[in-house]
Image 1 (cartoon, rainbow, N blue to C red):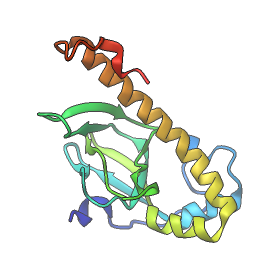
Image 2 (image 1 turned 45 degrees about the horizontal axis):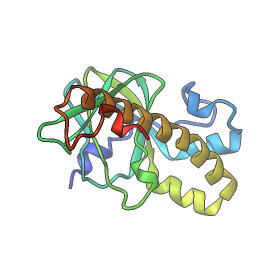
Image 3 (image 1 turned 30 degrees about the vertical axis):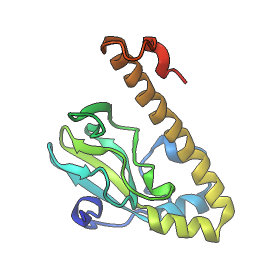
Image 4 (image 1 turned 90 degrees about the horizontal axis):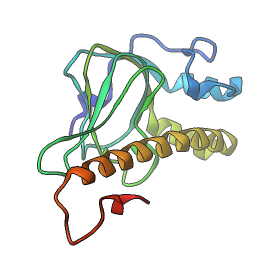
Amino acid sequence: MNDILTVPKAKFAFTADSLPDHPLFHGMGKSDRHILAECSMPASFEAGKLIVETGEPANCFHLIISGLITLETLDVPSPMRVQSIGPGDVLGWSWLFPPYYWHFNAIAEQPTETVFFYGSRLLQECDRNHDFGYELFRRMSQILINRLQATREKWIELAQFAPPRLGLPPDYLII
C-alpha cells in the first residue's frame, strides 16, 4: 500500500475564508466551504513525484493550485498519457465510488502545489449532511464527466492511427 503518496504531511489548516480561489468553490455556501476546509491541507510535490498510483486505495482528491500533473493508464502494453492537468483542475474522483481504487497514475511533471482533501472524511460528512453531499457530488460529477470526455477523445485519436481490428471503423469508440 502506498500511504505516503496519498497522505501528505500537514502544514496548516485552511478556513472557509482562506481556501484558495478555485472553480470548485465558486458559488458554494460558507457552511459547505467550512466542511471542506476542515478536511483539507496544503500539499506540494516535486517534479517526477508519483502522487497516486493505479490500483492503490483512493481516499483523497487534490485541487491543483500551480504546476502540472500527468495522468497515465497502465491498461495497455505501455503507459499511455491520458491527460495533463494544471491550475484550476482537480485530481481524483475515485474516492467517490466503490471500490475506491485509483484508475490512473498521477505524476507531477513540474513542482506542483495542491490543496489535499481527505475523501473518506468528506464521505462521512456527506452521509451526515445530505445537502452538503448533494452539492459536493454535483460539482465533482462535472469533473468526472470532463475527465471521461478527455479519455474518450484520446482513445478515438489513438484508434484513428491503430491498425484496423475486426473491420470496426476508427470512430467505433465514439459513445
